[in-house]
Image (cartoon, rainbow, N blue to C red):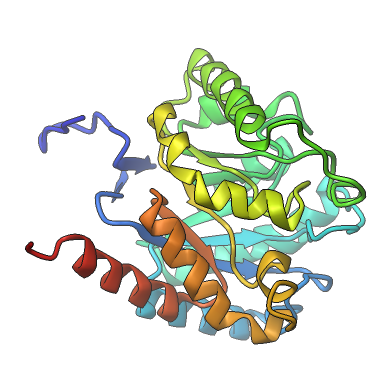
Length: 289
C-alpha cells in the first residue's frame, strides 16, 4: 500500500500518533517503562521520577521510537489493581515524560478505558491493551473517539489464570480467527490504526509461543503491523535454564527471528540491543545477491 507524502492517509507501514507519523517501513523499538512493584523482570521497578526520566532519556537516545508506560503487572499470577490505583501510578509519569520529551511517542499499557482516556489527555498517543477490549467493553469505542493507534493483544484467560492450563486445538488458527474478528470490530468502530500483538506468554505454553514465533508471518494477512513482546520472557529463560536477568542474549535471538517473520515493532526492556538487531537484520535482508 502506498502513501502520498502530502497526506496523512495511513497504510500498514505507518501510524498516526496524534499527528506524529511513525514510519514502520523499517521495524521500530518500543521501550518498556514499568511503574509497578511486581513486574516479572526486576530492575525496572518502583523508580523515582528522576530515575524514570533518566531511563526514558536513555531509551530515546538509544533509538526507541515509542515508550510504553504501564502501572499494572500482567505477569502470570499477578493480582489485578483498580483503575484508580493505576491512574495514580501512571498519569504523573506520563505528564512528566511528555513535559521533558514533548516529541516522544508515549504509549499507555492498560486495559481500563478510564486510564487510557486520562493517559491520552496527559500526553500519550498510543493505547496498548492486553485484552483487545475484552476486559473493558467501552475501550474500543473510546479509542475511536480519541483517534489514536490501538495495539490489540491476544490473551487466553486473565493474567491471574492464563498460565494455569493454556489449551488450543490449533493455536495459530484460533488466534488468527480472534484477530480477524477483532480487527473487523475495530474498523467498524472507526479505529484507523490497528496493531496486533499475538501475546507471547499470555495464556500460551512454551510450545505455543514457539509455534507463534515460527508462523508469525501468517498474521500479515490482516494487513496490520505486528508487535511482539518477547523480552526476557519465560519461553526464553526457561528454555535455556536461566532467569529473566540472564535472558538478554536469548531475547536478541528470538527478536531477530521475529523480525525475519514479519514483526514491525519490538517491545523490549533493552533498547540498544533491539535497535542493533534491527540494523543488522535490515542489512542482511537488503544485501545484494
